[in-house]
Image 1: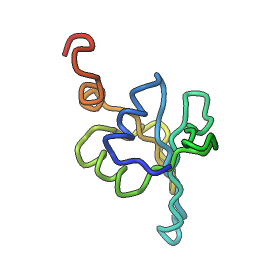
Image 2: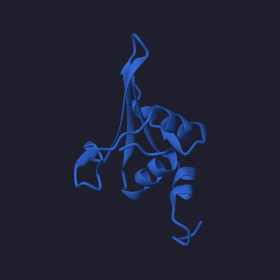
Image 3: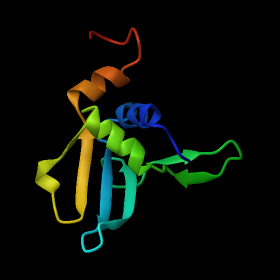
Length: 104
C-alpha cells in the first residue's frame, strides 16, 4: 500500500515507537529499501479492502519530503553505511496530532 507523506506521518504518530528504516547498497547508492517498523522491529502492516495484509510501502520521495520539512529526524545512534533510521520529530508530532487532541 503506497501512502503520501501526510499519511505516513499519521501512521508514524499513531503508535508510540514507530520509525522508518532506510537501507541501500553503499557501493552503488541504489537498491533502496524503506520500511516503517514498530518499536519491536516488525514491519508495519496494513489491510487492503479485500482483506489482504501487506507491509506498508514508504516511497523514497515521501520520506525525502518528510526529512526536508523536518517532520522526521535521523536517529544518529543507529547511523551506519547504507542504513538510516528516522523517527518522528517534535514538529512532526504536532503536525500529525488530530485537531482538538490535547494541548498544542
